[in-house]
Length: 589
Image (cartoon, rainbow, N blue to C red; front, side, top):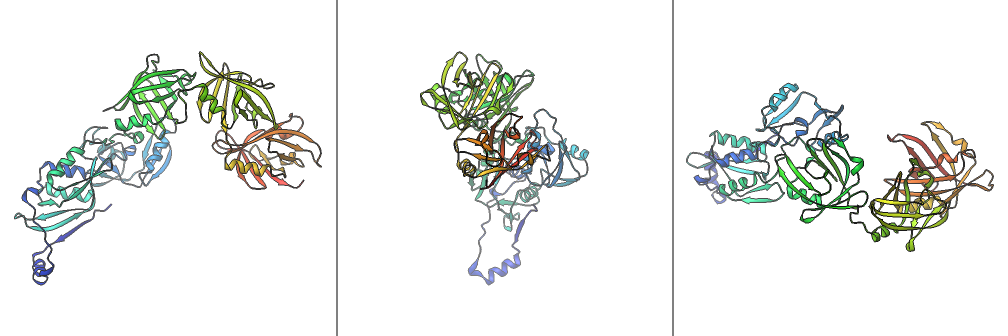
């Protein structure tokens, strides 16, 4: 931004003319006391200069130098991807690319020429990396003390009275930004001009508050008290947020934290500690819930040092977590801890996770709405598709029901306590995959994870909402549906294989396929519209492969569009590519 400086020159001739012709409308400018004049080599003059210096730390993710900044827009190549950075918001884009993979080597190249701005607001055009590196060498290292003051700022505009050696006012200079202020104070420091600051002046503090000062003494005291009152963020880690101890403590205590990655002494122990949950409480107590339901109690404390923010964990019976960790990165809902020697923890905030599990709490969760089998692995085999469209309902009196083809199969369930933790025992005839005793390894209101020996199951809560109700109403409207389009393997059209077959959905969760001409139902199945980071339609046809192609449609389809007579479904691969497209349309039958 170009500096704006308005100078009012009180030329004696015009002043005299003004005085003689308009005596009734005089403007009084009180000459300042000599003690209020800014002295060239005074502490206050130095403070004002440092407060108005250009802070170069905001773009350290690009230049890794806090004493200079790169003028925007600038083009950079981040891990091979070219980005035009035209606002400070784009620094987040660079950080996101760096964080995409944990173990890759991040690289950023600047496309020259560029314009850089020094601490004194001088602009220099650089044509190559070598010239930039030479300037960076003159900067202090990360987090080393420097001359600029970033924890307090002037609220503009401010003005100075400029006077002669007799302390008679000859100019009034209005300053509207840091650049103009820094250059004006430089003239004062070089004894090129005599001036005093016109009070009152409002100062803006780092915490968002402000303070009004009325003289030089108050101004010097205010800047001196505030100059070290915040973290100036003079490091090269853009996303670390540089929490104070107080902010870090409150952030840790706000919700439980779940372990997602864990490395100790260069050994990857993620499989061992994944989904361990930590709850940071008052009085420096941390409660950890292990995956088997065990509850461990330890202590935690934080401090801020030259190395950054540190989090110390101590558990009597858990040596892997017992360490003072560097909080090296904080993102929204995520904390990354690190210590030299190959030690790392990545935790994600989860306000729903339950640390203190009880039988009553488990029962209460189970009896909320329906539960669908989102994952089921038995002896290494994926049995999930066998339970598409077949939700479970846990009732009082230890009764559990599963809906299959619209019919309810009734059984029992029991919440038990074992040495290993809490277990869920399900008894359902004809459902051997579920008829097991499951250890509850993870519990939150909408998600339950269970396992035993080589078996794993994930249950997700299913509570219909307005969107689900609309989908249900459309599907069970009483009309029949046909396969209008079925494309697989990218572009292979197999719609004809479903010609002249009518599909009907029923409110009780079953569906059937009718033969051409309105013959008897020869295929039955189950369906369920549900939400899971989007809207889905699960369909499971009970048909052998040799009888009809409808077994190919057994899937939890993503609902892309739905109207009163048409629904478009898609199946995506792991990379987000479209594998199949299925379109159902209502027809007269």
